[in-house]
Image (cartoon, rainbow, N blue to C red; front, side, top):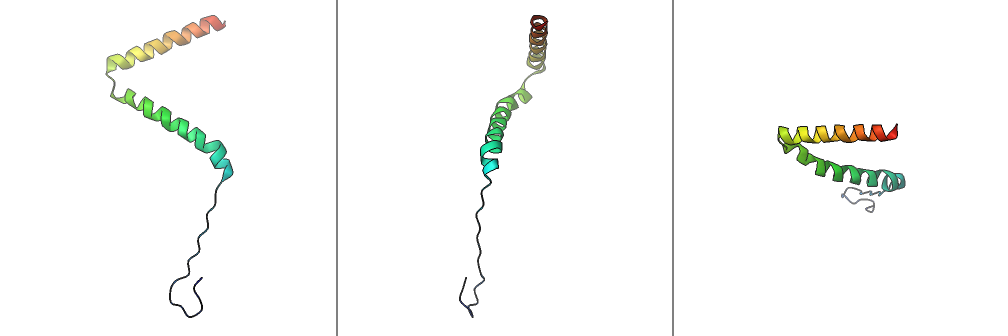
Length: 69
């Protein structure tokens, strides 16, 4: 605080940290950012590559379902 009579504006600074955010949400956000960066490449694939991915995922899911039952 400036002394009385000083024309400078008073400055007040507070630094707060949210421990729950640092422990729980920040790591999840980092993982989501990492996955989004990697999956962003799918947007530039050709239709042939995209359909191959979808068909492969369908085959894998059906195999998992067959083994599970």
